[in-house]
Length: 388
Image (cartoon, rainbow, N blue to C red):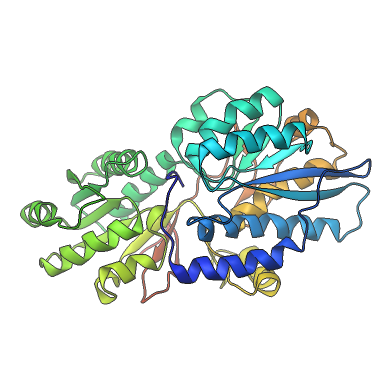
């Protein structure tokens, strides 16, 4: 996730807020002691983006609660910091977490914008971080020594989407529409490059996300007559674009990235207009265990604990916490020791193997999801999946 202000559906937000109340009982205590350490979690937990950030928070809480239930010598307290996804709030929270709460690690920040601003604070404080959801590729180019993420970046996602379009969809002509944002534009450009590498001819157009009439884009798409369309942006705008494309007679397969992995895409497109669309994400949402038994077991435990199915980045939150848990289990309780251990961790997780290469996840999997009504069932890995 890159955008500081992402819209979420009311139903998701309400459900997430209820689940957060249940999760809060699990451990937002202050500080630590000789037999405990404090790990922070930072992101939008009460604002309009909370429905997207609470799932990874809950995944992290679940991992830590499971660890603490083993009665270890050193217990972990998870302390939350509600940045509302805003860098101007995240920076003072990070400073307070380091100086007052004495955190030895941070899960997050959730968004790339706040990550860019908090990163230097964590570097100065020598506090390791693992983000479950910040995907902006530029974050990995800052030469930060204490920064990590468990989710693949936008270059990985864009490459996976472009390859999927030319291989699985057999697209010879791909039209890329993006919202000109710091997220949508570079993601769209990467998809374009990958599609061209796969032999497709491409064309690109940008929309104004604040607009409502996309007739110009629709006309350009119709004139190009593509086999597939990729939208780089968020589901609210993506739904509107898709609706107008279908009303304009465009029947080409519609694809989008993780910014559209929400049932709001279908709602905005008018329900059936979104049917058969495909959404990609470098995240794993797999309640049925299609990708493996680990994800099914995780989903069952998650639902039992939070009374909700896993959502976007739930598994990545769990895996982010796992990196810190493994360090503590190895006897590392000081921030710099934990950071050194995280560089070497190699542990099977839920979404992928928890292993890092220069802060980036070693695993580069991108997953694709089908749009069926208001559900988003997993198709499989973009590199392997086939569709009819």
